[in-house]
Image (cartoon, rainbow, N blue to C red; front, top):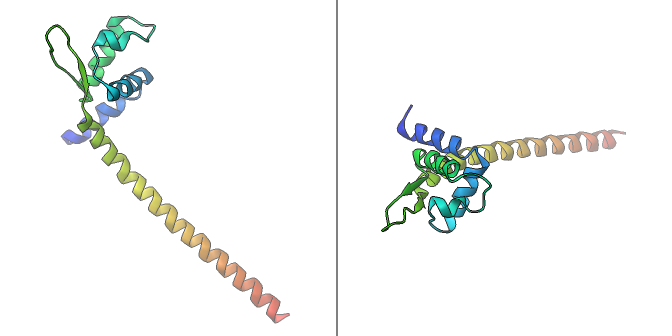
Length: 122
């Protein structure tokens, strides 16, 4: 498997958890420390730290040092990779639906023509 495939696998696996999806949503608004991220949850700082670690290993977030703070940053590059992957399959699915719509439209037209021919013959 290629590097981007592995990264996609890790990113989608990381985002399978609702708490991690919520953390990503919150980090989209602003960077935050693990302590700040933990505030609204009824779980330990250690549990949130583990969630952040999973996101970090998936390449979705990075941490830096700002004096005594260690803010967590959302890394949009992996989200772009995920969006590109999803968009590719969305376009393919839409094209299949367009072809199906066209086929159903032709079938309906053929049925209407057959019914009109039958009426004209009687």
